[in-house]
Image (tube, rainbow, N blue to C red; front, top):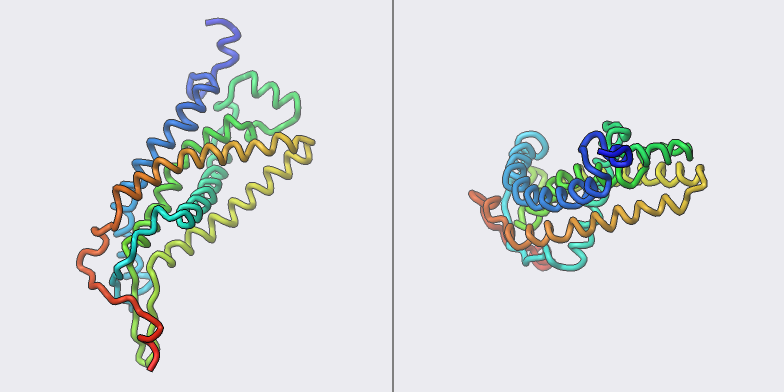
Length: 253
């Protein structure tokens, strides 16, 4: 093996950076996301419902309403993509801080960034690798919310004072995940752009959009497989009663 070849090998993987991106930044997350969007809802959505009933919403009764398929509507896809991007950035942030970039970049990239005084954790190869490793988890976590929503699950409660409450169950789950993901992802993006602007490398900071484009490309096949395979998520409705969809006239005298 020549010196140039050694200089271009990534210590952690024994591959070149280009091959690492292809395998860990693109191929792995595509396959991994397809697996997690099919498995996470099956395994974890029922566990969330049990935890909700025992801890968060003890007095509520679960049921379901018949809902029209919405998973492939443009607005629904766009909203779900944005939420996946947000939580993926959160996981990216966590992994960037946990992994040593010197083990995930070749010597040439490390030397180049050292000469310019740039933190190697902002190298696009390192960011793409971290994103690829964590993206399937983000997809799986959101797939739990999609399954609950697409199945039409609701919970309701009649109070002694005459008031009653009814709401879609997925709203509870979505609020917990969305709130944390949105704030953390915005903080990371601000820090990323700020650091690059300080180093007079604003044009390089725009590479983050290249990462987001890769994420969109990874999202599409996994999401469409989820939409086709999972469909109405009938397994979540077992043992539950169907309730009618209320109209405004139903609550007026």
